[in-house]
Length: 134
Image (cartoon, rainbow, N blue to C red; front, side, top):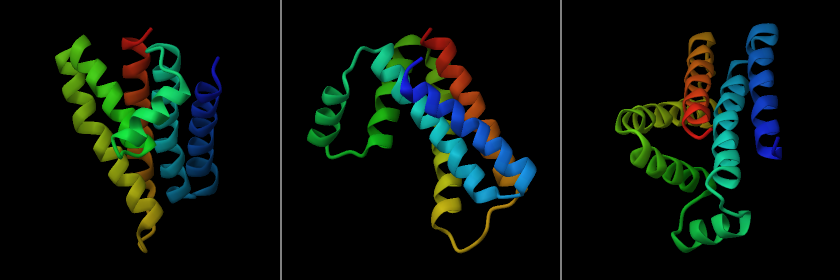
């Protein structure tokens, strides 16, 4: 298991624990989002064969951040593999990102519903890409 997959799994555990045992919804949303991003990085480095150095150079050359570049690479590959899966990811990853941005940068505290939705979206997206990039 790569370090990124391990981090992804830890973030899922943290998201679940923060939500269900501590009612800490914003941190739970944050962890759900990063579980998905870290799984994308795991796939990029282990299944798509990119090195960290190649990834960093490409994102720097294209003026993109890690999250944007990772999602671009994953969605590009999904588009080649399965158009329906591509459309699903294209629609739902930005929803997850929006929940995370609201949780991290908004004065308003997130609630149980947003936390549960972020966990559901992240779990679904991670399962989707794990299945497609076996």
